[in-house]
Image (tube, each protein chain N blue to C red):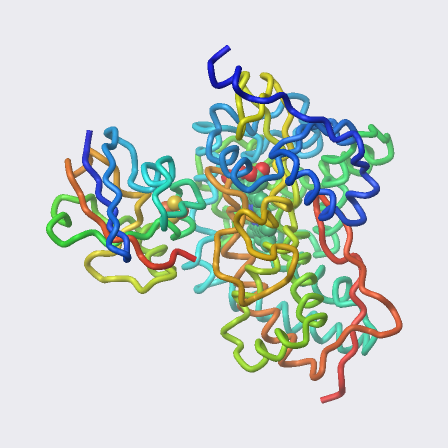
Length: 108
Length: 399
Ligand code: HEM
Ligand code: FES
């Protein structure tokens, strides 16, 4: 299990225990975490699963693929060159046991 | 039976629903159904219709219980077994064969210039037809068809072929009455599309371009899957951009305040697009089938239940959208379900947005001064499985 914390703008935090292989998007959607939409089900097609990874957790995350790179240019809230990722492309157990992300104000 | 199933209520029947009423205006029917239960058995449609946002969303995101691979699917008969009727992992193989053709980078690099040229061509046609012309049939339909023809790589067909193929095969997918004439027209198109694919693939192998079919030549994908996916994309990629374009123009022309706001701020066209597909989802309903007994939002469903996922109703669910029956570009932004969701999320969503709200809408309103509805001939909106404008006569002033 990996520990995933979603920080919201109002200060609330959702903390989830997530099975290995499960993406942040899937974990958020199944547990009703507000602010993560995930329209395309994780195909890097919709950019509605945008998250800002907190700097201390960036090391070790998988590289940004071409598809993810393209979608990060289509996010509703501005991209942060270092911290922006798609929640559907980051999976528990792949580069982290614990991660904290900030949820953007808007996904659409 | 699980404890959950015992607590669940049986599915109510909506025997008062008729196809004729749905076709004319489904929204009052959806409103009544949604207020009673999230799912009904509807004898006239021979399906369980899922009308609440929450229930539609659940179905879209659970392909293990709600399979896209429907038994006795008319779509499979009319178009072959495409990705739209497969579950993962089989679906994923087909979907990956579309590569990056329909994604934002390719749109920016290749397709926008082509959409622009097509817009100019069919706008000239509309102007030549003169005030009183029908915006759907003089402009939106050929524009959408020609865009799709080039994105797909059918260099050996015309936009008129695309429109005929699309409509006849769509009629096949909806041929519940088993009308032999409908099947004959649908099969003729089926064969014509196969022949066109057979003819064009060798050409594209020698003269590659950015199209879907060109991409297919280097993909490890069986010809049978290519044929089915192309037919499904002809059926699913033409009427929808045409219809959102028509509905968006009609909505703006019938809401002068919002039109004035958009004319003053063209950055709002993407918002107009999103609100138009929310308000009138071009694909109002699509099918799924349960793989086991289950409970959906508190309602019992048996294994093998044929569902209609009514995103046209979900998009007007008052639990999610305030004053949902109104067209309002200023409503708080919420995700609608018009492009579906989960693994079958529309592959052409970016193409539709680029061609309709990036190019067509802003330029139509800029190029046709004082664009307005024709006071003499009414606009007509119709349909429920697919819904859009069947007539949109417009007038404008000379420049
Ligand atoms: C406003 C315009 C459009 C709307 C509202 C729309 C809507 C949809 C919906 C609701 C689905 C999912 C159906 C289901 O899950 O059963 C879908 C799938 C699909 N659409 Fe669109 N569509 C539009 C435009 C387009 C265009 C322009 C293309 C092609 C260039 C296209 C290609 C596809 C394909 C290939 C799929 C199948 C995806 C899959 O099974 O993984 N669509 N569309
Ligand atoms: S869920 Fe669509 S891009 Fe991540």
